[in-house]
Image (cartoon, rainbow, N blue to C red; front, side):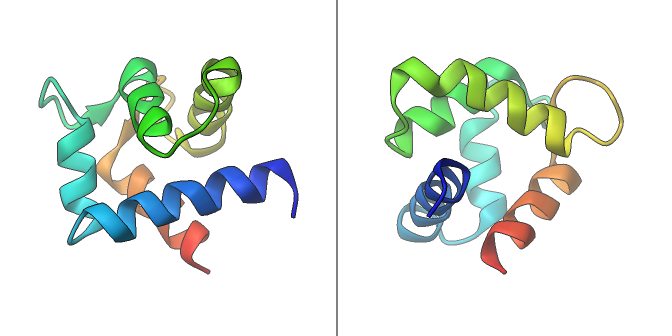
Length: 89
């Protein structure tokens, strides 16, 4: 299993074990309630998923780079849902 697969698996485990739905997880990590996950909010999600602090910043940047379709440097609900759907498959 690659490092990317390991990270995605940890995120999936966090969401399925601690939240009833992906939307509940999204709302939990959207600390300021703006409907988007900022880089710092994604870092908090990664921390909860037990991703090493050393790589959290890099991983959060890569997640935004990979899933931010509208170019606003954050992850909105639709982008988050697409990421979760991809992780689940």
